[in-house]
Image (tube, rainbow, N blue to C red; front, side, top):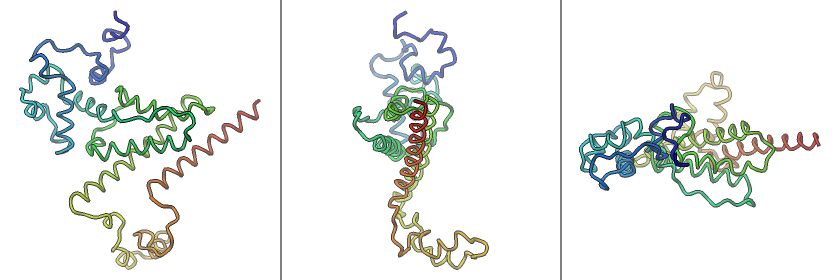
Length: 266
């Protein structure tokens, strides 16, 4: 067996078919027009449909029609929509990754990782509509995970701690990405940023909120901070950046405690 031909290896017995396709482990179809159709063309067409019309618009029939083939032609390459969605999700994770720079500040590396993840949600709004069914298995997705782990090389962390930090950052990226995506959609539909910031709703909320029923929220609404109508100086800057910096502060504190423990053990 060729060193790169793992298709019949026992380890892949329960490996999802979509993952096999993404790694090139599935045997190519010998049927159908040679050179006119392949997995990449099918996936690219599906992404174009999802980008323009949303994920519900993606079907094997719709993709086949876009490519000028019959649906049966697609099934010779991809067994069904579940595999197609897996491949679409992994394909859009093929993003530019900065060259490895050991001198780069680890916080900056993590900022770049989070920003790149958020951008995927904005460029491909359907991305979050595909449910998470397990750990990343596609090559492009795993390459992004590998990038995220890069700045943690130098720290005294075990493998579980490293992956927990990446899960924390990816969870924030997903949350922030979905919110940014929804803001983009609303603006494209004719809304403005004021709708999200609540500008113009402050006076109404001040009348509606009872200080006794909302003892902690009321003073914030009264100050104008809730609807961004406050005259008090905003010292935290962008909400997304503020949240990320506090996460990085927490990671930094944890790393400091780990380093202190390691030094004490010497």
